[in-house]
Image (cartoon, rainbow, N blue to C red; front, side):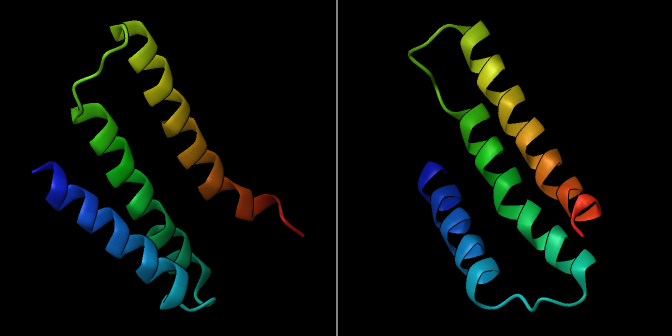
Length: 77
């Protein structure tokens, strides 16, 4: 399952970089969030060698980063 998720993350990242048009912006933002959500799913499902608290902090940081990436378009001139 991990290898499939890694492949989907890679494919969706490449699709976003090379195939998604600049307009409409809403579609572009949505497609940017897909690989980020997959990365969060991968990180959450991975067995970790660190404490549960540390893993939660990292996952929260990834979610906040994803929300900020989506919201930044509203603040750009």
